[in-house]
Length: 288
Image (cartoon, rainbow, N blue to C red; front, side, top):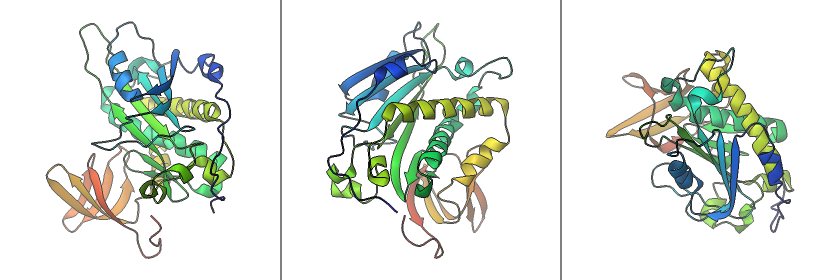
């Protein structure tokens, strides 16, 4: 269903003032080029006086990081940013309690769910999917990656969290290496034209805040959301979790964010690990 590749797509001028003026962020810092927004965010998070949510973005990353040793390929037109958050206070309100640290491991899923919601409204035919634990797919290929890190907590500093996201927006994959083109997608290639990156970011941030508040209040329908987008449900998966290998039929994602895998010895609840093999069921085909 993808539109013809849009080689040479020109990204619309980035309206930084819309982010600076938005009440969704306490402060915004945007760079032409940087090694990694998450690396800078981890360093900046150590400053006791830093206001949050603090947004760090870049037009291009030269050493963007993903989970483990993975690197994020970034080209002009991508949307790459990191948020420094104090989850206990940034989403709290009269009817919303502080987001306790036992909920923080689910923030990656909450961020992915927010992006799936936004993409479902913008590109419904693309059928966005959440690939546990930290990727978003559109039209059967990866369109975004998420990396959550918790920096050290110096004395006198509130405990913070860094949420990094890279989204292929106007960086047409016609310019990417072949090994990336086969598994990744850019919004401009799917929609057939450029997309406003600041509008996408603002839409995502608003939805992310809503879902983070739902996480804090224990809203039951939050988990229904990430289950509805789960890409792995119904497939046979193999997960490397530390020194253990878990293989079986994926039952989806539970309320606490664990991947459920039906194995010959029972159902395993996996809270982390690396997916090393995915085998689609015959009904789903082998498109993923």
